[in-house]
Length: 510
Image (cartoon, rainbow, N blue to C red; front, side):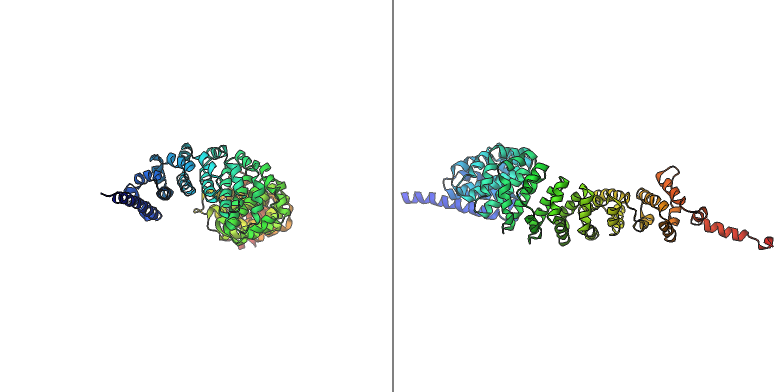
């Protein structure tokens, strides 16, 4: 056999390897092929090709493994058990930029599924290698590394701390300053994932100077970048008053309010989430939002959105209102109650309705004036309906009940309370009757209306145990009227009158 023929054998083998990994990489991009590939033992065939002498074979084998690991936690587990991770980590430091991107993709695909798999990536020594990749010249390598680090950090505080300890944060802050848009996005996302678990982790991100650079990107024209920027700022601001104040000091208001009207729904939602996280901490921070015109903008945002997108806006109104009577009144003046009443009527998701009930309770619990604003928006009957509906979730029932009690204990607007006399269950009825017993002794006009509207008659029909709070309230109401009036509206009184007619003999009166 000639030398040429011998070389041809090797060339054919090389072509076959290239064709194999390219075909497997292509097949693994389609979910319907994954199980067949797995059953054919694809993992054990790809592993040795990661060390192939031909760079194209190495890179494509890593790409195929990444796609397989990305598909399910079972396949990711197979990558770990196949002892493939140490091989990839070693290659991250040795190989070219194309291989590094593919290797980082595999690490990300494994880490994304669970804390246990992410820990396996950490245990393989991947963090130091990935952090070194953040210093590469090629932006694609930086992006792949940032993505993998973010996927590791997102699971829990321990993994996030491991990423911080590896020195990733300062380099990620440098990455968000790079000109490449996709690198900015992924780096901002990784900073968000690191910040979300603990105040100490968020503080590390702040200490690296991230807030100033993130705040500058609020004005970006790239919607995907803005999503990640608002998410990162939210994760920082949520932990403490000090961190929220640092975010606010970056002068995000009032320009952030414009982003609530962004065409991208996720930008809107993440922006509303950031405003919520700032508002929840103190009355002063809430007042700052009010002064910037934030309440009216958030109310408008709730009106123009639906479902989960509405949720942070609804909760923000509740947090603002919870702080003080003045701030709750600012929500009322900005038509917040009217909009929340609409949400309660038109939303189908129980968790959105539960948040709305909670927010209404925070607004109405302060003073009779606040509760009147709730009552006149026809909200009480809707809250009652949510509470008594057997199909409502437990959370919705609890929040509706708590909101009702809080509002009713301040409400002296009797026309809004009367319908509840007929519909409310005993534990809510107690609070309704209690309010009548407070108002009627001091208001002659209300006493008259209470009779003509049928309220007094309804109260006489209520069965209450002697000595109970409800019984005492009924007695207090009855004491507001002459005895014959109370008797007249008591159950069975008309029958007694008819009996007296039957027993009456006119002849005896002559």
